[in-house]
Image (cartoon, rainbow, N blue to C red; front, side):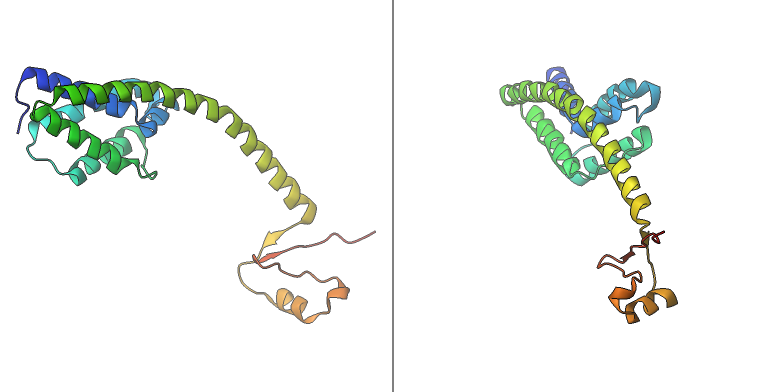
Length: 191
């Protein structure tokens, strides 16, 4: 079913823009350049494509919308959605389309306003959280590298003859013993 009037089509377009604009997955993809140098233009194109998809297809099911959104994100932004938000976004779009079809203009406009406010909050949160994570990740990596160098820890994938002989030796002989995770700590010889 196509939208009943030009007003409802325009309102649905605003709803699509609000839903996709407040979707953290898409915002992160655009802000981090996953779509290349024209990520913002691709995001706007995505709004148009989703709007046209609804207007040119009748009785879309939520799973069809999910597949379309995932396809666009994968093709245009090299992004796979694994945070569970894809069904929620698809459901919101289906509900908005249905409400626009039935002329529930007031409810749609209220929800668009809420989504637009959420959009600004998400952008602020993404920028605030991003900087501290980068610092933590680099210090964690450095700590892990330092720990690996100091202990000489190496993963063991299968028991070797030296590992099995280490189990048969008494602990006071100083042989390497694997920990419960399968790592063998190799200690430096004392000079």
